[in-house]
Image (cartoon, rainbow, N blue to C red; front, side, top):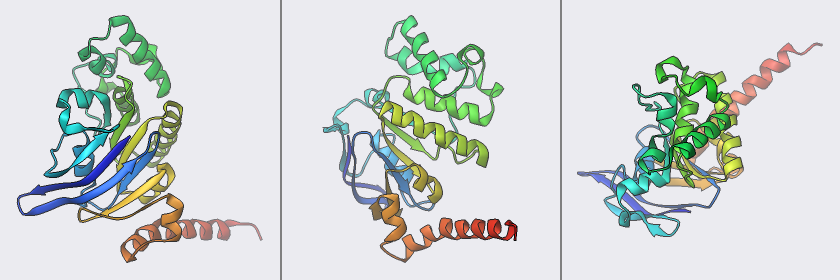
Length: 256
């Protein structure tokens, strides 16, 4: 569904992404994982041409995205931002329905689609349609952001640390909800995060990046049991250490 072929992005003498090649198969969720500045968000933005590559190419279902008009490409790909990016002057209905409206969908189809999506992200359509973003909690806004990204029935979603700004309980609920939605719709997704635990819980495959390069890719299990170098081993050491600490705390509290 998505193929990156020696994708490169330069800013003057600085190389943000260096000859990156990878694939996301239909229905797969690929996580781009790495520390800040490793090139993961730049890579994500090159897929839908929010950032134009310096070299290499992106193929979407076999077609080079550089041959597609930018507005058409972006309407075919759902995009979820960390800071949501809802339009504050629009209602929730208008926010979710904006892309179908631009595509010329009839009003009754847009209304049905908005209500379907609000149900899908576990928000009550009757209570949400006419509200504005500032009337919603952070978790509710992020759910609306996911609904908006799905509005035009895309087969591909890009997610840039969508749950990073949320409290742990809300984040956990939304991770579970997103996993259910993705499975239900069979959407192909590329998901950016710097949180290894999130990557392990959500990803079918994880791509570890460092300084614009692909360091290792594999299933969550493969990364956990066979890190390719010290950098990856240090990354996976964090959730392992945290799990041991939790186990120790539980053990100390157990009755004798």
